[in-house]
Length: 421
Image 1 (cartoon, one colour):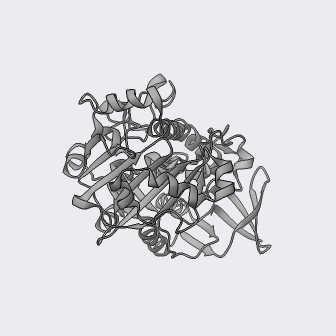
Image 2 (tube, one colour):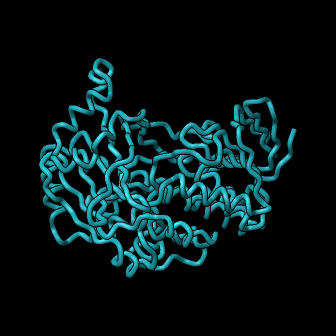
Image 3 (cartoon, helix red, strand yellow):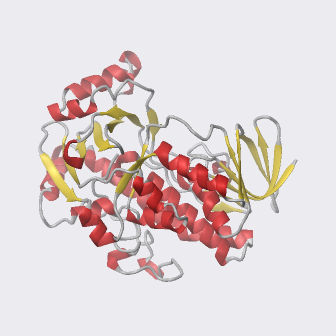
């Protein structure tokens, strides 16, 4: 049996950045991960300014930005007709208003930078080729057994192992409540003019982004409303028919993205009933899986990890108070972000009257599209605070103004604006 102070399950972006924030506060961390440290992950992480601020705390923001793609603007159009719905200025407009850029970086690049940072930090050890097979709550400790039969007794365990986290069952709730979405992602042509392009239809949501050094990446999110047809004809055939009905520029951007690799299945989940239990908690997708439409998954990973590190610092290393503070601080904003992603997905796939009202609203000049794109975090547009107010020094919002307490807005003009899918 191996005794460790803090054990993190998962060493992809969420687990690695969690380990770094805990180590940044002076706490030794051991990380278990199934996959090797370098892989061919085709996903792209969207990093808005508030996420880059957290990376700057670790000294990684400049290195990430140097290897990222910064779009000059975002356009969102109807996938069937090609009609333009919204335009949001990014690039210099975001830098000026928010102090940092809005960038996209390949997951593999971001993970490689985090792996290097962990290797250089004497407070972090990472063990690859290990997966948690079981987690036993001992009350004053947690016993983790890996798939090879090895055991770890930890003073606290953090689940950063995605929607299928071994810790989720200990925290109650968090079940899926939406129909599934299928996410396809593959390399594609470079987007022209440095523009991040989105298209939406009742069944599809397509994103065309760039990657550093040239080239591009395409994601196609499919709302599954024809399961029988997919079982009969196959996913690729059904999605191919849907793509054939889209505008020419959508087909040109998507190319062969659909059917080149197995899709990922995503659903909207209700929040966990408890964010921490005894000496266990979860971060990122292990706490709240995100639909891809607002592309906030990695930003949530970073915000969760930073909040957990600060909670340990505030509690002077006392585990239970630290986990309780983290669960309190992050529960509402994380849930609000997930609901905004779900609501924005509903708008993207809207039909009939809702679709016509959405198009009319999105075409008006009354909506601050840039702020909507940058801020879907639940914290507000400036320095992470609502309505342009700076966040209080303790990171909490008093009373009903704390994000999410009054319930997330379902106004399509609000911060659930168009993002990279």
